Amino acid sequence: MSNFKILIIEDEVFIAKDISNTLIKIGYDVVDIAYDSESALKKIYQYAPDLVLIDITIRGQKDGIEVAKVINDRHRIPFVYLTSHSDKITLDRAKLTRPYGYLVKPFNDKDLVTSIEIAIFNWSEDMKKMNLDHSVVNLTASSPLSNKEYEIYLDLVSGLNNKQIADKHFVSINTVKTHVKKIFIKMDVHDRLSALRKVLE
Image 1 (cartoon, rainbow, N blue to C red):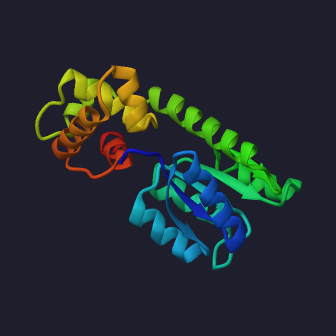
Image 2: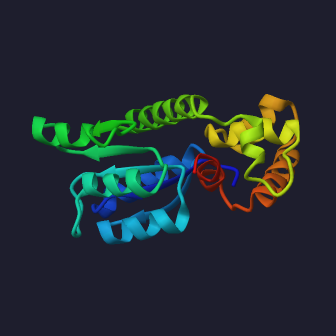
């Protein structure tokens, strides 16, 4: 879990693979691509991604906005819309789901990366406003998190990857991985979003 995990929901294969290749090149972990709403919902549950890119017009029983509503109801995952629609009706529907970004096609790689970085930053800021006090986090753990583990826990749920955490704390990536492993064992979780949800629930 060294990178920020992203799921792409896009029914145009060429566009989806192009987005995936761009993100992988700059260091993100693209966990998968979903080409319709049914597989999208399954993959969200399967991978628990850190961020979802959602095309509004997709195949399946639901469109991207309806998929986003499910994300809001069942998961705590930030998402960014990708769409060729900028009309008022679509925009008004999309706004109600409180996305972390709205990117209109066609867009270039720079626009995509900028939107993702802003989404991650805003998600991080929202996490800081939640009740993630050390004592509250410890209530969900089988044994208390050390001060350093707690600091790294906050970095994890804020969206930092292992390298960023290592740089911040002036330690090696292997040291960070060891701390992360201990945190996950103590909290009985397997990924950062589960670690966050466990505390918030």
